[in-house]
Image (cartoon, rainbow, N blue to C red; front, top):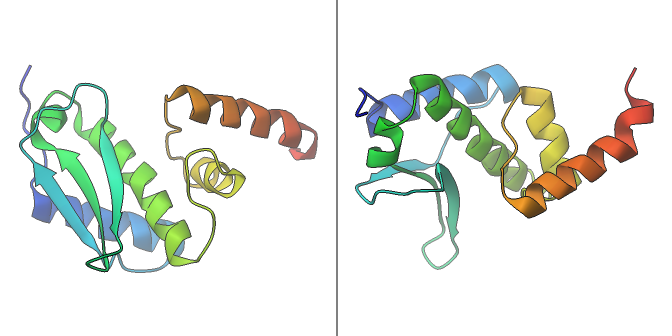
Length: 131
C-alpha cells in the first residue's frame, strides 16, 4: 500500500531534530531520495571519498510502503553511522561502538545476519555489566 511519506526536505528536518536530541549537533550532510524500488534495504549511509561527500540515501517507493515511524527509525540508524564516522569511531553495523550507540539512542539494529550475530555477541559480552 502506498502511503504519504517524507520528502527530502522533511527528512533533513527530521535528521536535524534527531541529531540535536541525541548528540546536541546539527546534521550537516545530505539526504537523497531515489526512485529505485528497494526490496530489502531501507536506507544506507554513503561516503563518497572522491567527492568528499557523505549522505543518507533512501528509496521513495520503499518509504511509501512503510509507516512514518519506520522511516524515522531507519533514518536514526543511518544517523548513528554518520555521527560515529564524524567522531572518527568505528561505524559499521557489526562494530561494538555502533551497536552500543544504536542501543543508547534507541536505533534499530540491521537485520543482516552478520549484524544480528554481532549484536547477540555484544549483548552476551555486556550483559553482566548492565544493571
